[in-house]
Image (cartoon, rainbow, N blue to C red; front, top):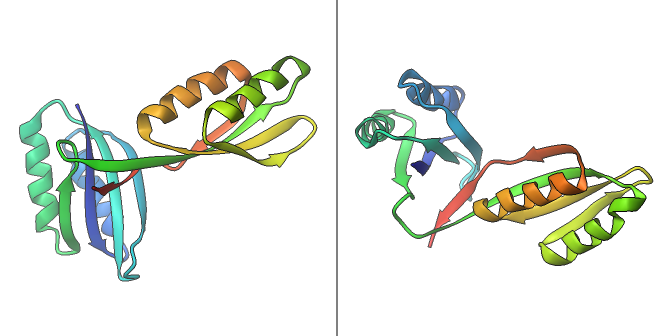
Length: 157
């Protein structure tokens, strides 16, 4: 089961490494990690997505996160109501045979062209996680030249 965990941490050198090492030491791969300052520049918000089959080990990790001196709070959003988003920047090939597909895509999804060149277009898409996966599948049909993603960010409702 995928878990979305948010940790508010002091914005200090080495905190990210210590938090990430808690997961890797227990054999969990972090699927998504996004970190940024909050409204208080001394505090950063880490949004971590991890696929954890063993709930007991994940509970241990969360307890150990709480014990880290630089961690302010830890929240597991998995069973709570929250809003999440992911930003995608996608460079798609421009060919005569896919122009209608690109136009259809732009009408169907909250996407915009941020750069348009003769051989490619760069699209910006900001969407919730499930929709982002659908968007990537559709863009693969159109022809992705390059794709970068921010990772998930989340906020409670």
